[in-house]
Amino acid sequence: MTPVVGPGDDSATISVVALASKNALTWNDWDDGCSVFNRATGETHFFDLWTSYLLRLIDSEPTTVESLARRMAQELDQQLDAALRARVFKTVQNFDSMALVELCPGG
Amino acid sequence: MANDQEPIESGNGNTEATNALRRKLLKGGGAALPVMISLQSGTAWAISSCASEISRPSNGNMTSTFGPSNNPNDNNRDLVESITGISRSDIDDAIDDDFSAAGGDYPESAPDDIQQAEVMHLFVTNGSCWVSFCDGPVDIGGVTFSDSITPDACNGS
Image 1 (cartoon, each protein chain N blue to C red):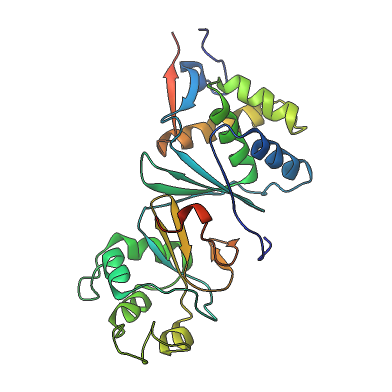
Image 2: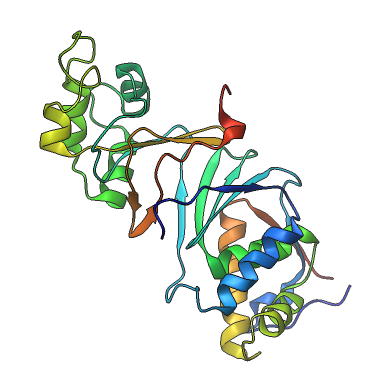
């Protein structure tokens, strides 16, 4: 698979973003965001709506950082620019540090 | 955040929940700054006001989460303080309180000195469940959770 070219361009080393443990997340939706319990780590996270939506997209299917940025732009009426790509990439990195997702290196 | 909402538990890849999120965002519901808060499992937070009781944590709940007050090095104290501003000494006060005194101290009767003095609210993650021990909104890092957030799926677990 072709590596994603993103801001930086650290994301170029990432090919696919996928949940670290499928079916390990328990979601609860709130007005201002979502709390997510990760059975794999035993941690509970609270995310704002935007961050929650991004994780939902990853939850639905493995994808790429670029694809995530495009979907966020299209579905949320946001401009697909370097700032959005950077925000998506940074958030994905944060998900990775929380062991919520796996970043598969491109090659 | 509304205080009377009920949490919606939704599974992985839940399209309806994803669409609901999208609708909220399109209506301008997105936070100005990203909010990503992580809570350690089994951690209790002393937060917000506790005007009445639903069910309250036992002394065992408190000590298993924070450790005894004479051993106040538990990292959970730091976590609570950083998130809520409730001080380590306040947490120790709660742990020191005599939970077993019938009809007396917290949590056997309300109001009590802890509720009046410390305005405690305990929020505990417990596996996939979380329990609000008090009837009232809970504020975590500026994010308000609603009342009594015990999903049905958690009952009895």
